[in-house]
Length: 130
Image (cartoon, rainbow, N blue to C red):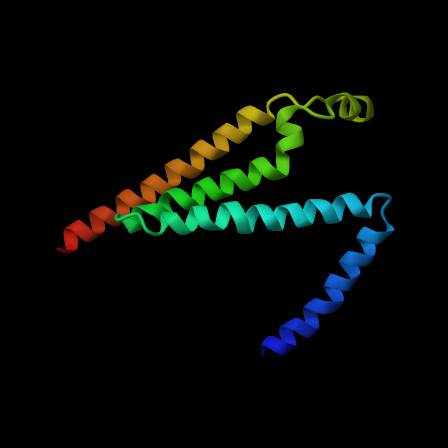
């Protein structure tokens, strides 16, 4: 089954690499991908591996998941959140980047609030069973 998945994934990867090579700056993209791999393997992996060693392990995932999603949103939308490129965007569309930072904060707060509600519900359910 794994070999079938790999055989399906290889043409998709080759297509993606060809598309990157056709852009004007493939070296910058490959450097960014390499830096992302190094950052993950040398910084993030040891950090969240240490989180697994914290004694109340059941709480860790209720913090890790919303924090990870929030950081992923920040990484993807950082140019918009920080306002980089606002002039070019405004020139093309007539719109501004106003409000992206506030919306990111609201989404982050909603993720943590939902996680807290789920944790509280499961804690109450476990307490009522015992």
